[in-house]
Length: 166
Image (cartoon, rainbow, N blue to C red):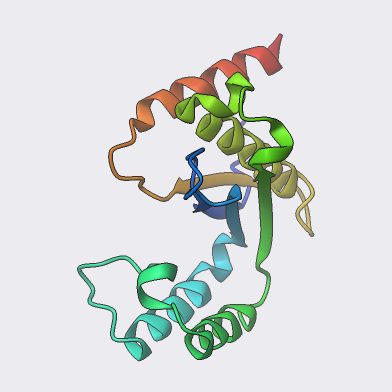
């Protein structure tokens, strides 16, 4: 008989950019906000409060660089989100210069994105496995990246799964 485990939900978004030009950011990373399913409504209320207070239209996602540019706004959003109980952050941050610009893992932007996404997914899975009160199943939502073919990332995740099963 199969019993479903309780869930954690992970919301993943990227920071920085994958570019290598002199105008590109020094870092590229992803952050997963992980929360127990039963506490997800509190996180959603906090985000809705931020959106309302910052006058972000419902037709647009709340975006850090577009809506939360100035320090007082950042302080407000950070305070609201920090007040949500039970949130765990998983962070993968890559300093591009430390990897080496000629490394194929960074020069191919799709491979670079997929590598970082795979690392953050691995962290989320470990977080769910070690969740207080017992192991949990996971639902992961990655933020949409315009012009990016997410099917390739799903295929990459499948390769990682198969490799881990061997």
